[in-house]
Picture 1 (cartoon, helix red, strand yellow):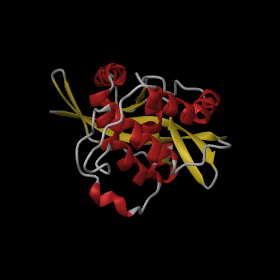
Picture 2 (cartoon, rainbow, N blue to C red; picture 1 turned 90 degrees about the horizontal axis):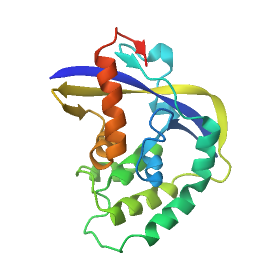
Picture 3 (cartoon, rainbow, N blue to C red; picture 1 turned 180 degrees about the vertical axis):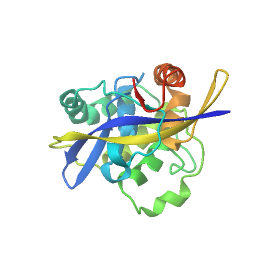
Length: 200
């Protein structure tokens, strides 16, 4: 399996007491709008260009930060609309969800982290429940752009047509979202044929 490392750009946004990065490459590459919550990370978990180290490709931004701000303001309404479209289902352990795992990245040190070891649920009702939990960890009332970019290093393994992503959140989104899968594959394939540290 060939290993490849890409750097994904994040626009940094002020959300009250937290500085959050919003993925500027794949923000619009999602089948369901509320999954944009899964493409957000604390700034402290991201790198600047100088500290990235060895990467095969640096992805260029595709999302305008002001469009992202509008989307962020609308997330609660989007989740409310999504909730009305799916039946209510129960699950024995609602902590074992991708969104809750991501909440630990947005709220570091949260004790729930050790409980989040299962695979992603593809069930819409549970996914929306996760998104709602995430919203409770964010102040979306007055998001402000901070005018700079940080990067997330993502390592992937490529073998034939198969891609394995060594990031739990992005791996989960890759498995459950066909549009994201297609766009991510395109970038990986481009990167495989470029010189080291290329911008694509």
